Length: 181
Image (cartoon, rainbow, N blue to C red; front, top):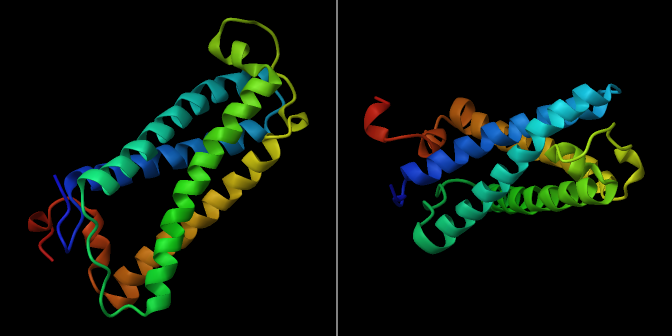
């Protein structure tokens, strides 16, 4: 369950991949909702998007708790240049900051727009125009930043796997005994 000096444990791996799926679904649903003009379809997508955001928040808090209080982080790869190790750490910190900022700006957008009652089903009517609500701007910028961070993170993992061929990508997978590499 816990990480070792060379690879992540099953709890960290599960949090990582579950978070990745939730974040991709949130980004997809968020960008899709933004592009829609039909209020009913947008409402249906946001009713999927908002609970995912709560799940992302819970996963982020659990990850922070698990990583800082319960688990240990595997040691950095020793032959990586210092700038790569520092970049990897900065990207991981940025993930936490952006995810938490996205949740705050999303909740603020829903509350300040008055969409909370509509999305919870306690009120009827069309959704308000979110572009007129100030927290919507950092929410949209945060989504693009989160997408850029995902691309950087994924590119670095693929670089390690296909260019360096150092097996680093396997540290974030389940049991090295089952990979045969």
